[in-house]
Image (cartoon, rainbow, N blue to C red; front, top):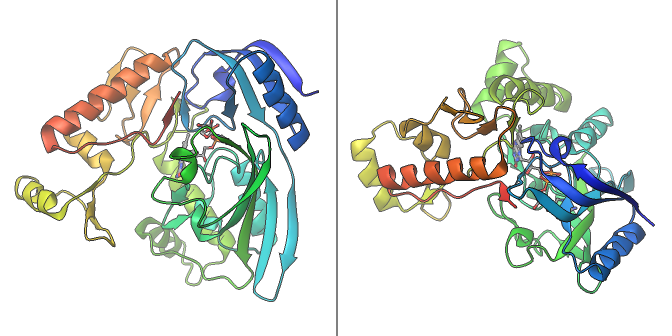
Length: 339
Ligand SMILES: Cc1cc2nc3c(=O)[nH]c(=O)nc-3n(C[C@H](O)[C@H](O)[C@H](O)COP(=O)(O)OP(=O)(O)OC[C@H]3O[C@@H](n4cnc5c(N)ncnc54)[C@H](O)[C@@H]3O)c2cc1C
């Protein structure tokens, strides 16, 4: 039987540091325990809430009746040829530990995704991405348990329907599966991706011409540590909103009033604009209202100064969203899962 804790504060289990309570917190470390936990939840008529590292959730309820904490561990090499290595990783492994494990062994492809918080199992949920790379670029497949039938199922890269901070698990299969392991395909012959401006700037400043994957990882870590607030110091869940994609006509119109509006052309002819820039233009950057606020260096990051409730942050996010709509006629949507 899995380990169950009663009336446990979730404050240290979510990076926003919201002090909600789990009436029952069930730690699972293998598929059998997951199935037992789900059966137990069913007997008690409680819907499980699956929690990984809690770095992409905003807890808005004072208490959650039945929380399953993912502790499935293990990193295994399952195949290799001259060019590639295939690994299978337990969903409860810490993402960054897995990245370092790969870099230590000379397996490339994950280095740009260094230092992203959270677990391996949650990474496909929103197709985590940073510095020009997304998990979909190295993702082979995943295994998951159907929460209804308790059957185990494989999902290929195309089954996951990855998009920008999207997958099938955030849409039509939302709340239907527990992801138990992820398989990645990593390169032995590296082609590093340093196209992202900030990475090449750091490497150039250190006089590194042809970087190793370790040097790219170190550069990414350095940039992230200088740009993003550490949840250990101040509660946050990274980027709260996704960057919106707008029609080209809308973009051309906005550009007349806001010539500095940054933009990224999309393959479908539309234009992605940075949500952080839009929020900053609305005057939110650095604002502080009691226990909540918008980070002083990064307008995309909403913060908990210590004692905020999830509701207060959700309310702030609605006001930020409404002001962007009013000023730019652009709808921004949350990247963070509001639970
Ligand atoms: C400082 C900071 C920086 C960040 N930077 C980035 C970044 O650069 N790029 C990026 O993409 N993200 C970033 N994030 C967001 C976050 O790190 C990722 O989304 C991460 O993958 C979340 O993992 P987690 O284990 O913490 O998920 P959790 O927050 O625990 O869960 C997220 C959602 O997935 C569900 N879930 C979790 N595990 C499973 C599972 N095994 N099976 C089924 N459902 C599950 C949960 O129920 C929840 O709905 C950042 C967050 C922070 C705090």
